[in-house]
Structures are given as structure tokens and as C-alpha cells.
Image (cartoon, rainbow, N blue to C red):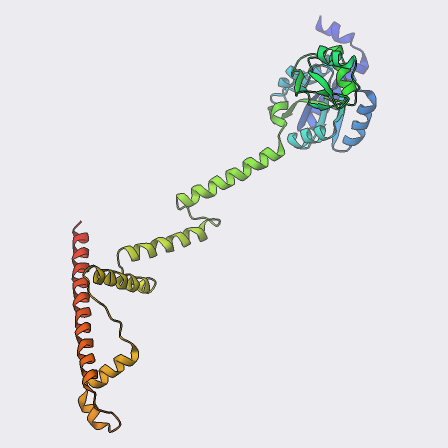
Length: 357
């Protein structure tokens, strides 16, 4: 019986199925598109645009299924395409990446006015604002379409953004008429990509429709998060090594200052810190600290060596006032030494207690 049926198949149909089977076998990428509501002139234009990289063929759904059945032994998972042969199906054969194919088809589409009975591909919205219509029956027509309007500046104005048709709903005749009069073109004319086959996998339209700006933003965020994680975990890499070395240097310097570790990188800071602590202790103990000027120091050193003064005939004997000033200076120096001694003892005691802890 099957042989009898096969014998009555027209030769041209056998040839179509055979050609389709060869194209399916020879091309790694097979896409299903829906050509419903696509005017012939736009189809010819798109064929011309895609010629060279893509090959489009359209035939009856049954013949496409027969070609798929013949090649399923060679093409793993190709039979999954049968579930996506909706509307007026056509096949696109190419060696391009599926996502590049989707992007090319999307760019080739053009806006078109809505027609009664068409299915809305997405929510169709009418934005608020002024129109070019004079007040009249148009206000009632807009109300019938669910659009609130009023008169502003002698013209009809739409009061608020309104979704007149939700995605997936049929467009009513009155709504289609209003949209056309308002200049709203919610539809797109072009090849409607349904699914793409590649290496046993089926990519549907929602997977292939990628927002490039969002994709770039996600990549940038991923890169930033990876960089922050690598720095937090001290993971050495080409991009993080400079920052990690700088952080390690600062941490080591901070540790040396906190633990009073003598090193060339921190010794100046430690000396300054010790001086500040010494002065703070002097203030707390109400001890006056006098800084000796260079010329005073030289004079004191000179007076502390009487034998050298005798040898030099140019030096005069100190007066009583100078001797008293010298004695007071020595007393203050002795007080400073005592303060320094107290400071060092306290500092040593603090270090010993810290070591015990």
C-alpha cells in the first residue's frame, strides 16, 4: 500500500523533497521562519539583502516534514524542528552563527501599520500628548478604543499612556483604524524567526533575541565582580598583581608602625611617634621641655671644656649671668633626661605586657 501511494506522488514534489534533504544535510544551520503576512515586495527585497550568506526556500509544510524525516538519521535532533513549522513556514540554510542570523533578520525588518485581525507581537501603547486632530467625533472614537482624551490648545490631546492591545491579542478593526490615524506602526514587516537548529540543539526566538546593550552591561558587571573578588581573596593575576603588591606594602608598613618594628621604611615615623608620646608625657607630668638652640648648645659645650677655653686667648670669661643661665639650662636638660627615662620605662613595660598577652 505505501508503494502505491508513493507511486502517485508527483515527480516535482519528489524533487523538492530531495533538494530540501540535500540542503538539510549540507548546511550546519537550519532556521524556520514564518512568512505569514509578509508582502511579496518586502520578501523580494529581503531575498536580495540576504543573498550570498543565506538561502531561503519556501514550500508546503508536509514536504518540509518529509525532507526532515529523510535526514533525521544523519542529522541528530533535526526532527525537533517539526514542532516549529507554524503559519507559512520557510527554511533558511546557512553556515552563519544562529545569533548572527537572528540579528541580521531583526535588522532587516521595517515598521508597518496594524491590520484588523493581526496578532499583537507585544503590548501596543499609545503615548500621551497632543495630536493634530481638531475637536470633534475623534474624541468619541478614541474613547471606543479605550483611549482617554481631551481638548488642549484647540487640539485633541491624549491624557495618559494607554495600552490598547496586549501582546498575543487580536487587533480589533476600530483599534487598527485609530492606530493608523495616529501614525502608530506597531507591527514589523520581515522574516519572523521561529527556531534555529545547530548540532542537535534547537534555539527558539526568545533565546536568540538578545539585547546587545544589556549583554555588554552584564559582561562589564561580571568583569568588575571578578576583579573585586580576586582582590578580596588576594588571588594573584595579571590584572590584580599591582594592586595586591601595593596593598601588601601598606599592610606591612602599618604593622611595622603598630608593633614598633625598626625598619628603614618606618623608622622616621616611629621616631616622630616617640617624640609625640614624650611631649605628651611631659605635658601630663607638667614638666617644661626646652629645646636647645644650636648657638646655645655650642656655648654650653664651650663652657663645659675650661681647658680648651684657656688655650684660646680669643674666648672671654663667662659673666655671672651667663653662668647662672648655664646652670639653669643644665637643670632643665637633666629634667628632660628624667622624662625620657620615665617614657622609655613605660614604653618597655607596655611592650612586655603586650608580649605576655
